[in-house]
Image (tube, rainbow, N blue to C red; front, side, top):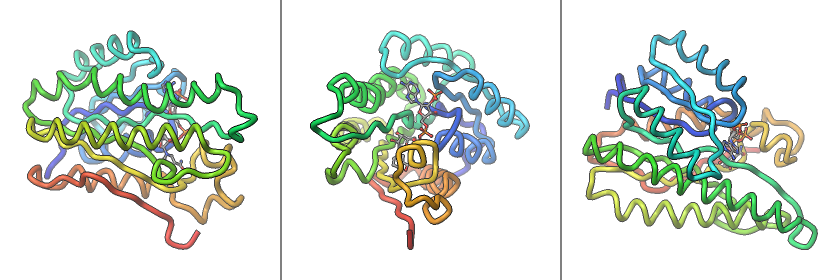
Length: 237
Ligand SMILES: NC(=O)c1ccc[n+]([C@@H]2O[C@H](COP(=O)([O-])OP(=O)(O)OC[C@H]3O[C@@H](n4cnc5c(N)ncnc54)[C@H](OP(=O)(O)O)[C@@H]3O)[C@@H](O)[C@H]2O)c1
């Protein structure tokens, strides 16, 4: 399917996986809105996106706050003239043992990773319904498929995103809205490098461009076809 002229909102689009997806989709002629908390990163990325000849804009909001999300999404829909694609990507990785991680850090991971995905999807849905079709890509993680040591908050948040996303898929497919649940393994970004998730050589694992190509190809499938769930791994990390 040709994606040219579609409008995509990508949360966490100023860096990491969100930025890579923004660039990959802009190369297909998709107009892009990126969001995040760091305005400098967003400005730099928007300038890069504009060199590709597409409309590009940004909104600064914290996905933890439903009020901010509703205002930010509405401003983006006005600026782009509607929304066709949501990449629900913003997230944090905060790791630590079950015993020692503070309750407030634990809660913050759930708020950002689960409530963030929920608030943004809920705010975007009316705009997809307006168009009578659309795509929502929810970025979970292989960490949501199985718990592991020192990752209880992150794993629990991502397991919940998988469940939320699969429920959304079951409800929304009848509106021609494809809800796609992705569970990537380790990819070289700030999150995995700062969190010590690579073995010290980020070159050996997946790169953000690999993830972005995968998302692009899933979105380009004929609308009668939907990849409901998918995982991507490094071949030989
Ligand atoms: N990298 C991996 O190995 C990996 C593997 C599986 C899944 N994932 C998932 O992929 C997604 C992207 O991760 P990444 O690796 O690209 O991480 P990253 O490099 O740390 O980037 C995280 C992005 O999320 C945004 N963000 C974080 N908290 C936010 C908040 N409260 N409100 C608004 N935006 C917020 C950040 O924007 P600002 O800095 O502007 O706030 C940033 O753009 C996450 O959901 C992550 O869990 C990553």
